[in-house]
Amino acid sequence: MLSLPIAMLVEYLLLRMVFQVILLSTDRWAEKDVNPALFSRELMRNSSNFLNDAELQVNRDPQSLLMKAHAATSSIGSATVIIAMLEKTGTLKIASEGDCGLKIIRKGQVMFSIYPQEHYFDCPYQISSEAVGQTYQDALVCSVNLMEGDTIVSGSDGLFDNIFDQEIISIVSESPGVDEAAKALAELARKHSVDVTFDSPYSIEARSRGFDVPWWKKLLGAKLIGGKMDDITVVVAKVKTVAVPEDEGGDIEQQQGNEQGIAVAVASAEQNEE
Image (cartoon, rainbow, N blue to C red):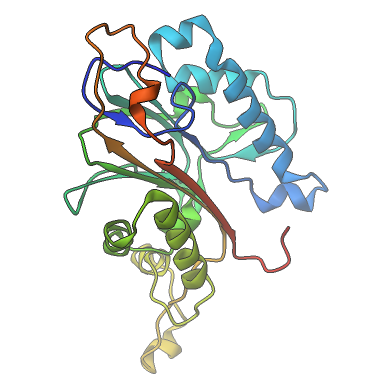
């Protein structure tokens, strides 16, 4: 395990690895008889493989990791992606391409959020196998200093398009652990995504961008509402205090306790999807 020179640590089973990579492929690849999952999976594998790169071990730069992983990916397809890496100083470095999201919850409030990159509404930036498209250079790069007790919630747009911030805060605060929180968030997002009567964050944003029901329906009091059916990925992690050895090069694995501080939940709004 990685020894931190500060008294905090994201409880992560694979602390030395990427905190999270979330990938979402578009339907247009399926229309071309291309399995949209192949590109995402290979990009994910390459991201993991390059974590042992000497330069990345020193700089812990998620944008560089995205560059190397993308260059090594040969599958056809495209994906949105968010990568976050924890520095020894406790800083979480983030590189985001597209409409995945990450929020830091501190003392019952969202104190940090990643917002989507879009060409236009519902058309996010994507890393692609095509020559024309976004690259690692287009990623939104930022960092945030973590504190003891912070909760990190990250996920695909299927999460944040269907759940409001206050719902996320409530579930995180009421859940006994991150595993339960991730599962509860994924399930609520799935439930909202198929609810045609739910005025979701997605429908509210759509109306603000000028998308709505026909004028004659408006005269009858109708408006565009409903959740967004989409794949849903949720990752929840929590910052905790650890006893740091006097020798900063020492191993803190035994002092970390159990490694259940991060949980991943995946749900699908498509009933026939495997």
